[in-house]
Length: 119
Image (cartoon, rainbow, N blue to C red; front, side):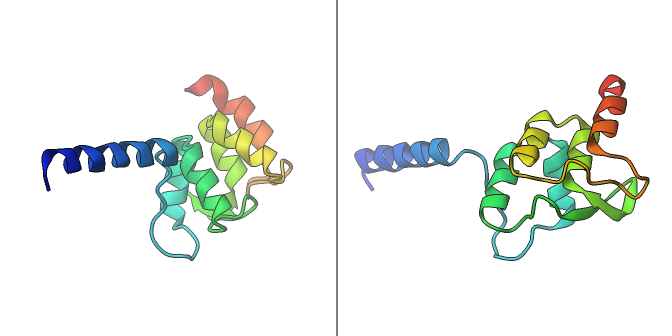
């Protein structure tokens, strides 16, 4: 390739990344792994989560294991406990059950209120 072709390719890559954001999903069509989903929730990675929901690979009301809740807990409770505001807002807007409870009977509101001052 000549220099002009490389510049064209580089410009296309920059545009594609800019339009696509950083929401890169792992390959496949099945559900996202629990660990990867948990990491996205606590990192407040809205791009990843919204792309996963849009692709049908994550259900906003699903439960996954988490360090404190090995038997599984709703996504919204993980995000609220972590203080992940953007992800929590997205889950609420996507009709996640705001009254869903952890195995310890905690709601997302309870967790957000309690853990807010601990960060």
